[in-house]
Length: 421
Image (tube, rainbow, N blue to C red; front, top):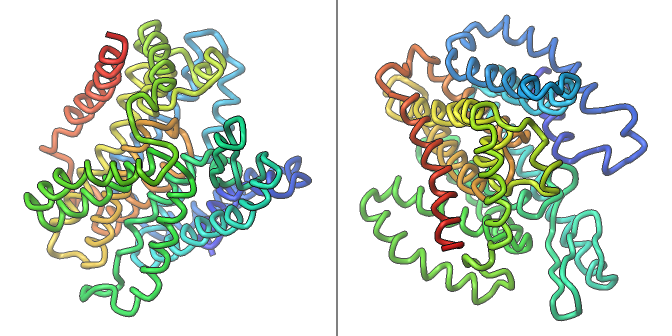
């Protein structure tokens, strides 16, 4: 029963019932569902002592949550910390619900089914509303319209609530994509191909209709990671040779070209973001203050966290994903574990990698999809035996976290120097 309530919690968070039925907004349905899930999660945790074998990652998530909720204290904005808590808690809870409930392959398949349904639900609504959006030349709930003049209008499908940005919906579709190919049996998908192939085609259509350049690049990242995993050096060579040709093909058939000039407005935002980071490099300018100051978000999750939470917050945020990667690698190498668990570890690594890559162009650091995905990763590690089966000793994850944090900010700085040189 607990798993069913968590799946409903995730589905309603992503579908945004308050946007679908505004009359529900005063009743805070998501808060109510969170309150229902908490005691159920506690009971499930008591009945599943193996969850306690996952230690480092939950501690890092908790530290990030606490640090974020207290990040406005240095700026003497004490009351605003409560707002941060109420906004961030429902999303971070998805992580803790995940490590408790998503700890077996059958449960992960149920999560996948729900996510696929949600992505297709948005796609179908967007496709049905496209003709109407073209007719009126204005936004609809599932179509975003931008531009001026009949020849310059862009029509892009999207979801509601946290998926209302077409780029974010495209990122959500990419999160699910690698999970489609996790077979129930070791011999492969078998009859499952009958479902996987059409869903994959629909997902490709969805990415195209979002008009998201980041999502297209994310698709190439997924393809590259898959080829490198299967073919190793040969796969790396193939993606190097044909990646550029793929970008040319996309630019030929998509009105939103992928180019440096296409992201100049984003670079201007990044410039201000770095100045905010320099202003307060230790604990940042505080959650939500980037939007309050600039009027727009950072369009880069790494920079957003660095600017709002300083290097301490960035280190904690990055460390959760680094630890997930390290432990998923360990699960993949285990011999005395269910082969299905290893297959899920591989797919989740690719999903997390594509999500973080696209997050370099989107501000999705605090949102539910990331924490849900990390919860799925933690659930796989729990299924493999937790920190005892895949220990972090000797992995140098703090060093990898430090390097990743520094490199991400250095790359932003380098791109700005090249742009404004």
